[in-house]
Amino acid sequence: MRRYKVTVTTAADGSAVAYSPKISGKVHSVVYEKAAGGAAFADGVDFAITAEATGEGLWTESNVNAGAARYPRAPTHSQVGAASLFAAGGTAVQDRVALGGDRVKIAIAQGGNAKSGAFHILID
Image (cartoon, rainbow, N blue to C red; front, side):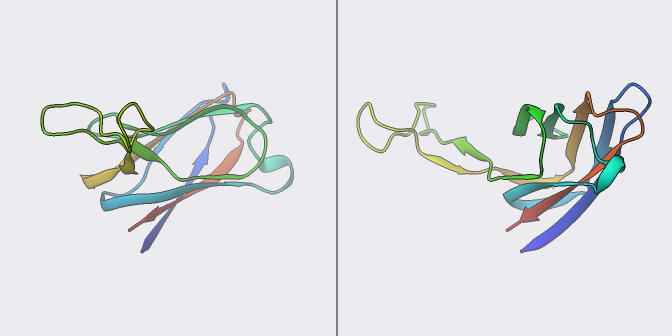
C-alpha cells in the first residue's frame, strides 16, 4: 500500500482545487483529516473528489462537518456492458476504482476563507 497526503487550503470564497501526484493502482480509501482549531474547513464543507483524466467519481459529499473515511467502489459490467449482479435482479457487484498514471482532483466548496484540511489517499 502507498499513502498520498494532499493538504488543501481554500481561497477567500471558500473554494479550492488541489491534486495528488500521479498515481497508479486501485484506490483503497480516501480519508479526510479535519485540521485543528480555527484552521479547519467550515462545517458544511462540500467535496468532489475525482480522477483527473476521466472525471470518475471517488467521493462526492455535501455538508461534511467532521473527519471521515470513505472506501470508493464502482459497479462492474460484463463484456457487453450489462451490470454484473450477485444474483439475477440482485445487488450490483462493485470493485475498487483503478488509476493509471492519473492524479486525484480534490475540489472544495463552502470551506470558509483560508481554511484547510488534508486528504489521505491509500492506494493498493
